[in-house]
Image (tube, rainbow, N blue to C red; front, top):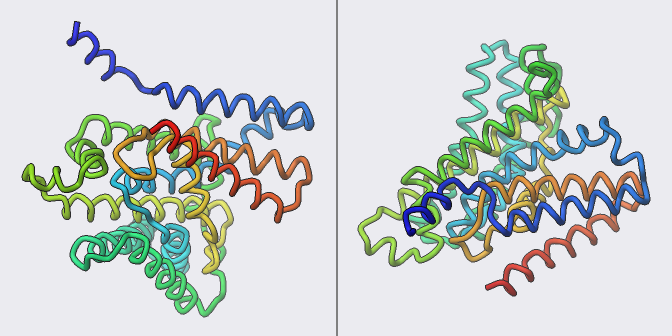
Length: 316
């Protein structure tokens, strides 16, 4: 009997919380479509998914971090920094693969420094990543003298505007990354230790696990996802801007929390984060269609985040 239960749990992709969040997404779509029927048009729905992709990608890294009980406020600034360095490399005539590796390396390096400051420097995640947020943004502005870097070739722009068999490249990239993240969290040592650290870090350390090493790896993953988000964003806009990524950390954190990842760590699923990112995309798109003021939108999104955290606390 127990073996059958364990097997069922292994095969389970969506949790009960994921299902409840998905129902919330569907209800939100129905309510918005009542007031704005154009919302359910195929073009708009595809647009919502594409608009959600960058936030969804960045939220993968935030899911790993928040599962450990941490936070990463630097993701938006890393998007800008990785984007402008990569864009400058492309404009300098470097091969596409080299430029992509440079952008990815910037993201991983920033994440590694965050993890190092948290584990070896003993800084709270909030302070360490807040500092990196300012440093990365400042470096992006200094590197470009505050000017955007634009005009890239077609091969690079595929990552933001291309397609494969009629499926937009942004959606393909997002699906591939979520499949990889799901596998890592579900079936690898890194995934198991990510949950263990968030559940009880001291017990995990006493069991002989090198907690510091895994936390550095997790923050590096967060930086990596920010860099991938920078690739997609830069390719879509055909421009890398030092002011890109403003408030992206808020949307990514919101997607993660709305998706059911506990703010104190140890609980959550990557599938829930994907649904949370779609909820954020639907909410923003619906409010725009309904001509809601951008200022009021910030209030509504803030309320949604607070409600999601309250639900998490109530369930505990």
